[in-house]
Length: 65
Image (tube, rainbow, N blue to C red; front, side, top):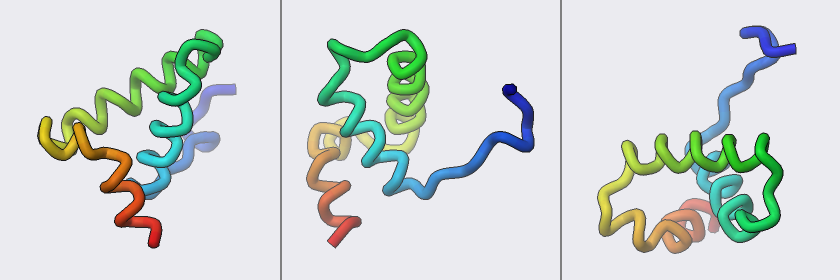
């Protein structure tokens, strides 16, 4: 089931939205969704500074209005 043809790319703002959604629900995530959250979080740490990451919800909001 895991082949290159089944992968798709998300826009940065979409990835950020999914991260925020999963982060809010982190205590109840199963192992698959927790692994996804961790992968997205690593990518976001590479993309944003510490100061930006502290305001990640605002960054998301600014890109969705």
